[in-house]
Length: 186
Image (cartoon, rainbow, N blue to C red; front, side, top):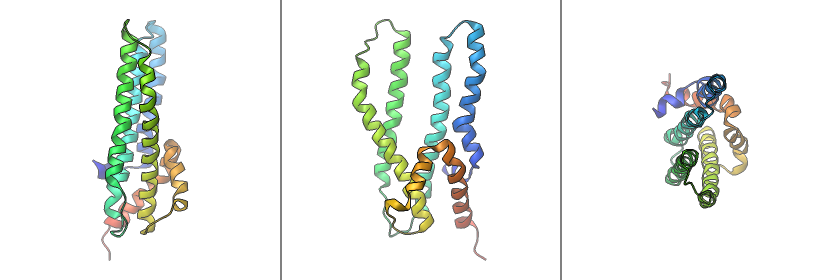
């Protein structure tokens, strides 16, 4: 699966991350308006959000772990820390979705529960920034084939951070890396 994502075209990844949720929400808005049931949106929009997140998180995981085999042996990237920090936002998002759905359908919901979420939210943001940093650093390390400093990958950091735009620039570079490394040397 990781190899397929690494070899995917940029437009396909963009479609999964941005296109499907956008088209889905565009199609379901009139249905909600005509049906007179706005509660349908409470189920549909989180589902569309989850599709986008699955695409984004799959891409981040694939780049961060799939490109490790192309990292030079003398460079040590902290992949295990990335894997731990990768899981924390996923757990956080799952808890938020469950909490919001419970709040929407329960009359006994205590809004003070959201206060307990604040520390987890802040730590989850930190983990996401770390994941963005790790993907940018991994990509640039593979491209340069040496130990790098932060000024070597600051552009990639912003491209990953703004992934719907950055995917158009980053994914073709990843495709080129894969093609160069896998093509037989003549």
